[in-house]
Length: 222
Image (tube, rainbow, N blue to C red; front, side, top):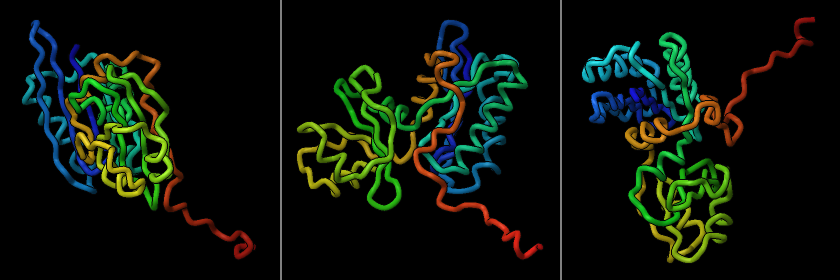
C-alpha cells in the first residue's frame, strides 16, 4: 500500500506518504501549524513530501483525507486536493473522521472519547471502543450535558477535553491527550485499512456555517 494522507481540517496543515512497498513500511511526513493559509501551502508540502519519499504520484494506491469536524474552509482545501489527485492518478480516495484520527493517535487499551472544542458551550465528540470501533456517531453536543452522561473515570482525548471537564465539573474524567489536530500518521494508518466506498471523501459538517452569503433584495432591482 502506497498512500498519501492529507489533513487540513483544523489549524495544522499536514501531509504524509505511507510506503509499504519492498516489505518495509516507511512514513514520510510534514506538518505546519498555520491557522489560515492551508490552500497556499498544501500543494507545495505534498510535492516536497513525495520527493522526499522518492515516490511518483502514479505509484499511489490510495489517498486519505480528513473530512471533519473542522473548519469549513480547511475541509474544502483538503478534500479538493485529495479528489483532484485521486482523479489524476486513478487511485481511490477515502475520508477519515477527525475525531477517529484523534482517538487512533493515542495508545490506549480502553474506550476513549475524542473531543474538540466548538462554539459557545458546545463540543464535537465521539466515543470509541478500545479497538477503535466507533461507539456513537460524531456530533455537536452541549459540553456539560455530554460530560454528565459519561461513565465514571471516562478517558478523554483532544483539544476540547479541558472544556468538557470544566463544563461538566467532573473531576473523575481523565485527559489522556489534548492534541488540537490529528497526528497525520494516524490518518495514514486509518486510511490504509478503510473500506473503499464506506468512507467517502465527503465533508462532515456537524454545525451550520457561522456566516451565510449575502442575499440581494430583489425589490431594489425592480
